[in-house]
Length: 144
Image (cartoon, rainbow, N blue to C red):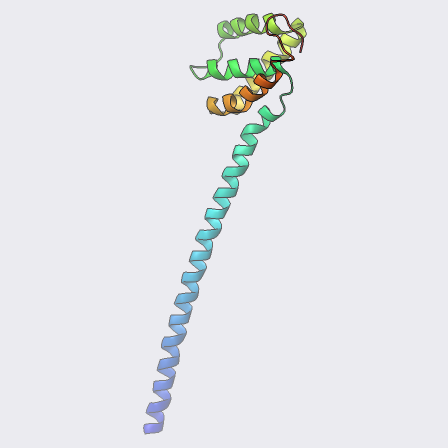
């Protein structure tokens, strides 16, 4: 009889330890899942930020950069209505070399500004480019 009690005690202890190990394994799995989700969120946020900047990184013309910057600032106060677009076209026509260049700059600017929610990102990204191109671009009536 004492032998049977010892075997039951060992089986009981083994069951308790098995249960504890199973619980620890589940807890470790949950922690790993949470860490994976956090890392995924960080990666997705980084990709979203890069994707948000991509319309701006493609800009290599000061006229398009100026149009995009103006459009982003104007669109912060509401949608680009036809009246606002007409004023934007007038301003860009003063610095563009041709009407075709004006159309290209305004169309790209409207698209790029709609892709980026934060105007400060547009300013931070395009201001250095416009500053650097200032020596090549004299402003009103200049060529790009």
